[in-house]
Length: 269
Image 1 (cartoon, rainbow, N blue to C red):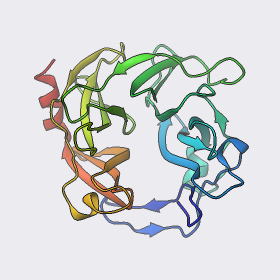
Image 2 (image 1 turned 180 degrees about the vertical axis):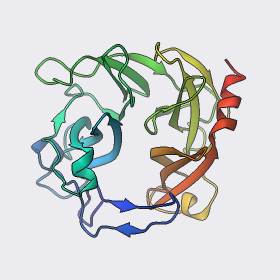
Image 3 (image 1 turned 45 degrees about the horizontal axis):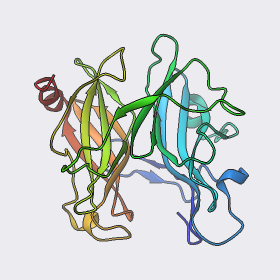
Image 4 (image 1 turned 90 degrees about the horizontal axis):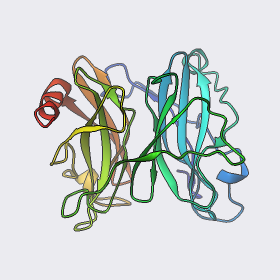
C-alpha cells in the first residue's frame, strides 16, 4: 500500500525461502480498472493477492476495491515464462464474484478436477468452493458454489474464516490453510484442514488449535495488532514456508514440518 492508501502488488525474490535476495522498487501490478480505482482519498486497489500455477499459467486472484462498493474478487493471469523473464504482461483483470456482495480471500486449487477449475472464496463469514469448466465470468455468471468450512463457536476461529493460500497436495488429501478471526479477542490466527482428493468439499479433518498465532512484537504491534494473515505458502524440502502479514505492517515467514502436520490431520480422519 502506498501513502495514499492504494494497494498494489510488489515483487521480492528469495533463493532459500527465508532471506530476501532482491526486492523491486516498483510494483509489478497496479490498479487499472474502474472497479479497483478511486477518485477520492482513501483505501482502494488490489488487495491480498494470491497466485496459483496451473500448467504454464499463473492465476492471480485478489480483492478489488474502488473505495465505494463492496469488495469483489478479480482475476488476472500471466504465463510462467513471462513472469520468470519479468515481462509483466498480465491479462486484463476481470471481476469473477457477484456484484453487491462482499467476496474476498479467493484462491485456485493447483489442479483441475474432472476438467474443472476449483476456486475457493469467502462469502459471508466462511469459505466457499466452486467448480467451473471455464473462466468466462461476467454478465449473469459469477462465482457460486457451496460452503466448505465455517467458523466454530467458542473457538479461536469463531467470527469469520477465509482461505490463506493455495492448498498443498499430501499423501492423505489436500491440506488447506485458512485464517480465522476470534470473536473473543479479535486476533487473526491460522488453522489447517484436510480435504478429499476428488470430493473437494468433503472436509476429512480440521485441527482444533491454530498452527500459527500472534506472538512476536511484529505480529502484536502495528497497523492491526494481533494479526497473522497469510496469502501464500510453498512446500520445500519437507517444510511449509508460509508467508504472511504481521500486524498489517510487516511481511514474515514461518516454517512447519509438513509430514508432521499431515500425520496430525490424518489422526482426525
